[in-house]
Image 1 (cartoon, rainbow, N blue to C red):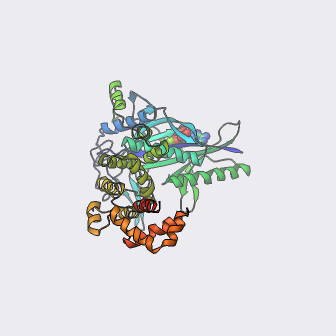
Image 2: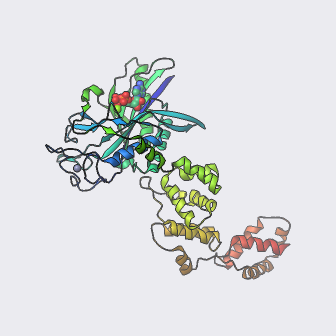
Image 3: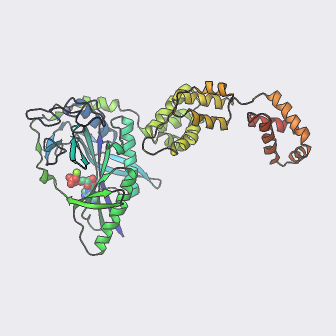
Length: 471
Ligand code: ADP
Ligand code: MG
Ligand code: ZN
């Protein structure tokens, strides 16, 4: 009877070469404190210089979700003290963000639903604290990495919708190529704001949940928090506006601190950085050069390649799959055949792997070779499947393997006919049964032919020959 209201704040690290305000390398990991300089460690007198690429990427992200780009925007200092932040302030945006408005559309129960965006602003990431038995250490490699914060309006109404929204947003950023979006590495992070209210009444007090490191965690945290708030309200207690930390192992969230307001951070324009003026023609150029997004690729697959809409959607869900498909069909132009194989066999294989770092570990070139062999019936389905396993993670050439191991199918119609005639002579009863229309007997003949050829007979061909011979 309570309505759930959710707004998400998504942080996504931009994959620029260098950091947002200095020339340090922007890359995940590395020996602690090896990718930093006087600017990102706040040495006195060091001055920030804005990375133009970060601005371009943020605008790209904004345009792809229909934001209006502010031609005038300002960096502000968000002041707070915490050891992961050497300056004791984060360079962020408040009053004049780079992008405003926009929306992400999701499909809920077959219907389109629009989640409006409030804004997308550019800011810098903080360092990382490493807790050890000897104490807490700080690694500033991540300090100053450019981030966009994508703030949704409170339009999300369930855990399912939140995950759909995140998946759509992640796919969009990946297609744009502006972020790696790896939740386990923290290049995509998400805070969940959630409140409950009764139909017809104003929105309730919200809590904000942090430390959500996977879509599954977001889903579970929302279910948990909605239930917790409901129990509080039912017990006649008020919801405290607070920040809560999700513990994924415990499946619970804990209160961290009472929620701070913008005024607590004493934001003010950073006097070290001049306002950003982006010209209209610059925005137009970025708009014009936007890469194709998932839905655009899917449309083309249907229109140009004749794939079904469902297959096209499945292929474009993940950019790496769509990229892979594009590369394979460049070598072997049988889109439907390649698509079926990827959605069937390759997905089956991917599903057996650990969820974190999924990759297709056969080069598109070798995959094309494998599929050519299969398509031409040089190898049968079983061998093709086995080869997929065998080639996975190697650079081996399927053509050579098939030759070396003698895996080629027996497509010699004349030879097979002799073999089958022989089988029939020795199995007159089965021949009669087949003639009487007992199609199950067909399996018997295929089996026998396989046996006689050590499994290499082309089953389709065997089938055809048997049909021909009993006529
Ligand atoms: P803050 O500056 O405290 O983070 P914002 O106004 O930027 O607050 O809102 C942060 C997020 O909270 C947004 O995604 C917004 O949609 C969401 N939000 C605002 N009010 C509510 C509410 N009553 N219930 C759930 N989410 C809300
Ligand atoms: Mg916020
Ligand atoms: Zn630096």
